[in-house]
Structures are given as structure tokens and as C-alpha cells.
Image (cartoon, rainbow, N blue to C red):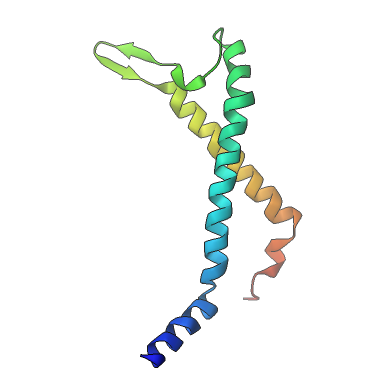
Length: 103
């Protein structure tokens, strides 16, 4: 049993599982922050531009009995772009690309 526990702990150390877990937690926090940013600032600005007020996710159009919620897609796309930009600029700004192992 002790050998299995030792092997598991070696696996965690060698594979960087702790760093992966920290990255996952930080990623979830950044996603929540970006969602708040988009809901508080971007959605109202786009609502003013599009002639409505408030939530971009409420924009949709209907063809027959089918409703296409294009506003929800656009809001999710904006979230994704902002999250990707934040990760990119933090990664480059902290020069984390230089920490990669030499190949």
C-alpha cells in the first residue's frame, strides 16, 4: 500500500498536476470575472447600439416555430474572446513562454 501511495505522489510531482489544478481554478475565476465584465459593460453598450437596453442574451429571431438566440451566441463569443485575450497577454506579459522546456 505504501508503494502505491509513493507512486501516486511521484506521479503528481512529475506530471505537474498541482499546477494544472491551480490553472483550472484560476481559469474558472477569470471566466466569472469576464462574464461579469460582459454583463455589466459590454451588453449594455451593445444594447444601446442595437436600439435595445440591457442583456444581449435576450436578442433572438423566430422563423416559424424555431427561435434562434443569436444574442446568447454573440455574448458567449465575446466572453471567449476576452478570456483568450487575457490569457494570451498575461502569458506573454509574464514571459511564461520562456519557461517551456528546451526541445
